Amino acid sequence: MKDILTILEKNAKATPEEVSEMTGHTPEAVQEAIAQAERDRTIVKYKTIINWEHLGEQEVLAMVELRVTPQRDVGFDGIAKRIARFPEVRSLHLMSGSYDLSVLLAGQTMQEVASFVAIKLAVLEEVQGTTTHFLLKRFKEDGVILDGEDGAKRLPLSP
Amino acid sequence: MSNKQEPAQDKSFLSQRVKDLSPSGIRRFFDIISTMDDVVSLGVGEPDFITPWRIREAAIYSLEKGYTMYTSNFGLLELRQAISAYLKESYDLNYDPADQVIVTVGVSQALDLAMRAILDLGDEVIIPEPTYVSYMPCVSLSGGVPVTVPTHMENSFRVQPADIEARITPRTKAILMGYPNNPTGAVMPRREMEQIADIARRHDLMVVSDEIYDRLVYGVEHVCFASLPEMADRTIHVGGFSKSYAMTGWRIGYACSNSEIIEAMMKVHQYTMMCAPIQGQMAAIEALRSGDSSVEEMREEYNRRRHLMVRGFNRLGLSCLEPQGAFYTFPSIKGLDMSSDEFAERLLLEERVALVPGSAFGPSGEGHVRCCYAVSTEEIEEALERIGRFVGSVKGGH
Image (cartoon, rainbow over all chains, first blue to last red; front, side):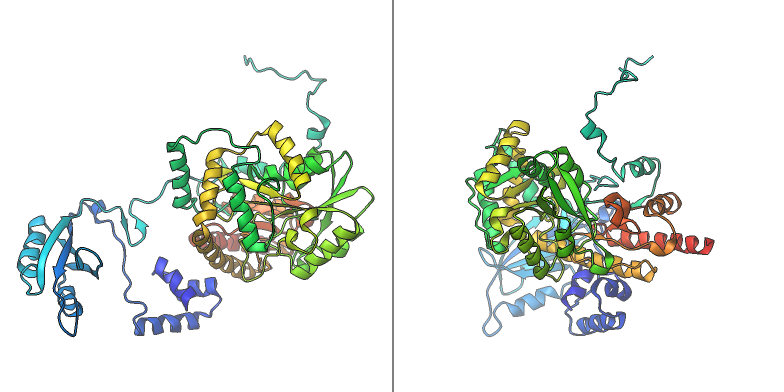
């Protein structure tokens, strides 16, 4: 199972036949393993990493640090679940250190992001304070360097 | 008019020893490829990964700190200690970093030093074949005589101990082993290695063991020759960083043996090379310190590609063993009624796929071609498709 998922993690487009060739499992077994992983949400989603800047698209991203008061019985989970539901929230993590929740926000403009923080996040009862950092440039996303690695070429033949 | 000096017609300054060296079996393919676009090459002999960043970064940092000078002829002590610790942990070997380890300019130089250190004119060295292209010239250049032992697909290209013993003469000085093997991908099992160790002991021979691919084995054990009973003293263990850590261009290898041998190798090294480049040595220290997870990641990736290529060839009717080590497959083209050289040339010209004819590795490589799977899965699939088309057209034409 792990060998199959490792391949898919790098290339979601790998077909069951290709995965079968690389692992030795039959295509049917691969298909079944993938289906099972999809059912139990080991495979959460298939997506594509796109460098929108190549299309001239502007997207504003901001990392917001939230200091929040945990609640009885649910700790940070209640407030986290509530914040996670906003589509503007790209990712959300509970942190150790000087703040509690790290929120990655996406929007069309800086104003849009700023007003989301002001109207939706800062006003939540549990939120004690926010610090917003706007992202200036994306270099690496999900383990992939967006502009690629060096273009050095090997010799076509070597002993 | 050219000012270039042409040698006088009736005189050549070349030494007989160099004139006697066979030309490389891959040289002419270079010239063909240089005129072509869109070639998929399975003819490489190195990883397609770039050296892991932590290792590159350590070398850059060493430059910034001003490490630009000679090192000890033996190499940086810190690196020798790390090599010694690696061999202790992996194979329970006990080499003293002070005088039993020498850092070299790749395994190539380590082999050259080993041969120069042990061979007198006319001494014979037994070499399993198909053989890595440098082994025989390396022996000849030191005045030795290479004696080859053919290996065959029926024995998974493992050298048979009895075949080695049959070639021993009073002039035999050493056996040169290269497992995991380039070009066949063969790995020697422990039992047969023990038999070869026994032969070396009985006939009082040195064993030079090139284990550059030691970390690239798939589901089998790599048996380190020097770790066999009583073998540490009569083995020159040769290893390096090029293949496991994707560091071919750094040119860092090493040799370990008893202090008499290493002292002798160091003597040749100090007069001909001084030391291996310091940046490469600094990078190698970092490789041993933090490279394990990168090695394992790359090995797993090679393993997936290995399956892909082996199944692909067998499906095309080119019978191919599952290689257990290194990153080469060595499929048979015997059903096609042409030499491996002709196969390689026609495949390159007709379908733009480069590979290395088996004959480049000695007569017993004939009937096979070497294909490297340290290339992307996309390239492997494209190459297999083109080779399939070529094989189809050859069979159709007969």
